[in-house]
Length: 296
Image (cartoon, rainbow, N blue to C red):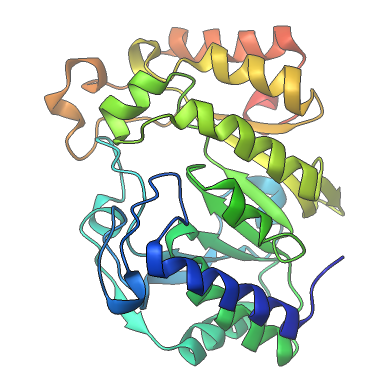
């Protein structure tokens, strides 16, 4: 059941209380962000947005003909050495906004004709953006909401999003906890994301596409990294066994050594065609054939 504006505002208030000893993500920093203290994400209690607009570079079911209405939030709860958007995620570039400003952005994307509201790196700003979403919903906004995240949520936070998020799109980065700690400062990443994916799938199920456009469900991204750093086989085996072979998964090939990656021998080069083909072959062998990159 999709929640009303009042119900969304209530969920936002409940999550806002979490900011007092912040456990929005798996870092569980326990800082008082309501008083402006800063956790691993780099932000306190204000909405901060880097940019927004119709986006045509997302997965085809999100883009449709009129684009995905993306809002890029500043800060991040991951610290990936290879982040292509490090100026936004780790340097926290962006503009602080009021609740009504973000609601107005949502409406501008709807007026452009975008098929959805795509919240990019939203986890650490969940309560703030939900207040804006409640305001926009109260004024008539009725587009699917996409939760475009790195997968390092706490399950408790995700449970508060049930009935609000229509499409979950986690980027499952690693199938190995040690690699996640070393390259993204994300301890227990793979251990945690197993529970995260199961909770997301419980809420929204497999991806539902109508007239070529996604309406509801789980869409998983996985970026292939050089030298098997991502432990892709572990990721795919878990998805096939526990989430299901009807899962829509985009296996991405566009890795390049951005930000600090060139300092790390394991990440200092692009992936090879052979590395990408190997991961696609594993997915096919496991029965994971539903997804953009697997069909190309």
